[in-house]
Image 1: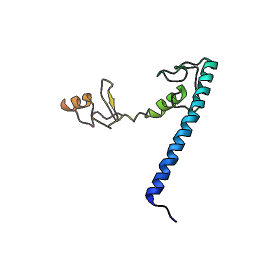
Image 2: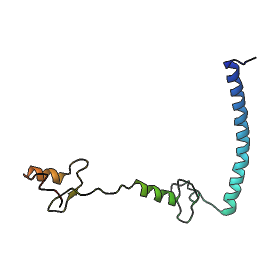
Image 3: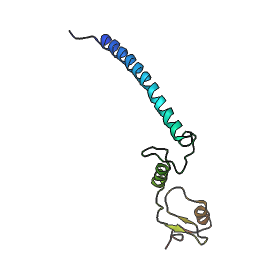
Image 4: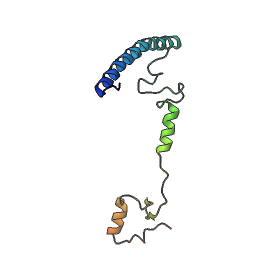
Length: 120
């Protein structure tokens, strides 16, 4: 006979309680092994990346808090510069993308046209 939704939910809740108990029991052993390894290797919170600072000599493979991972993210975050489209006599430059810079607006107010400011 098929079980009702309420019976299935009760069974799920019971199994979840059992799973949580097993997980908590296993965690005790894992924590003990970690503590032993920390003591054996003399590791500090800084070595483990728990202090917010990363020691240059200590890097773990695949962790997002490592020096190598941070350098990779920094490189990926930098966008290549655009081609300069406008330039003035003072050396100011603008690609033509985004908000117009103050020097460009001042030049327009002074009577110049965008064609006058085009980089050549």
